[in-house]
Length: 429
Ligand code: EPU
Image (cartoon, rainbow, N blue to C red; front, side, top):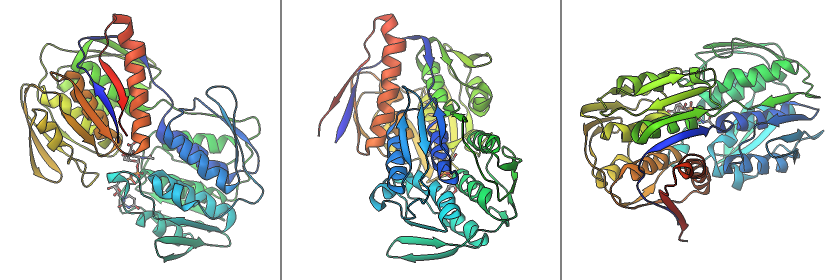
């Protein structure tokens, strides 16, 4: 198992830029299967999820070429392979976004149940129901799904539950389908209009992306020639830096971000007493002398999104008084609080979705193991404000990669300027 060895931080000052969004690049890459011509992606974050998606696309026949440090060119094949490499597809949840474009393009998609981390093993019923409504025949044998449809047809689809990736995969499938598709109760995350905007630029006819009703007029022939999909800034990375600054600033500027995408989090930070200034593409955070308690409930975007729940929990352990956290999106996304308690937090788990946090409590360095990416980030934040060194262990390689970049950023661009060394990184296999 690999691990980060972390020494507590003192004050953070400086400027920290944000990379392209993980949850946007994966969909941009999946969209390549809709095309017959190459296109470019810019502002590529080279994270493990990206690499996994690249491996899957290559096995489907897509040519992926790096053009400079932050750009890739995707050239789709004439006849993509309909079967996704089961080992790779199983290893990360986002592989499921490929099934819509693959089915629409080839008439068939064969894939395993997608997995990943603890929360990655969630249902895919909305994908299957939606594609079935568009005419796909769905079969499952020994955990391998086969979807087939000579040509998908447009349909009215109401999502029983708001799902980001189900919205994206059906939106992409509908671009090549015959006739009109209306997606109701669709997700509104910024990555969705970013994807729609690019597809429209290349000839698709999508309206309403970014609202809860998306209409797609199908049958477009997409042309990516001379088109560049510039990946939007990672709002979860930006928000995690903002929380870190609220805990350990100083004044820290989070640069290359879109403040509007962070509105739910910034409102909660302000309620906690954090000083925030926003510019066009930056947010400046000044930590207050005292943090106040906040009651938060995770919501679909533009609310307080679930990916901020665990890092914000760490902030609440340092607030004076009692806060409550209600996780409404995922099962099992509060389990990590047991380890935060071992570090000294006082978090009462009322049920699998609700927690009470009593603060402030000093945190102490411990050995902890991260169950998923965002809980891993929470442990890093906790370790940075703890007394004494901590070890954050992590199994899945993708967690390591994102945390590593988080560390690199914090160390090189913020802390070195203050000549402080806050952590060491190591690996024990
Ligand atoms: N759900 C179903 N059936 C489905 C699909 C989802 O019941 O067919 C449920 C899930 O179990 C969950 C809820 O719907 O309770 C919402 O899940 P959603 O499908 O929206 O999640 P997702 O699209 O798989 C994306 C992000 C997540 C982020 C969520 C919520 C990507 C690749 N992932 O996941 O990001 O937490 O939306 O905003 O876009 C992360 O970055 O660490 C991460 C987990």
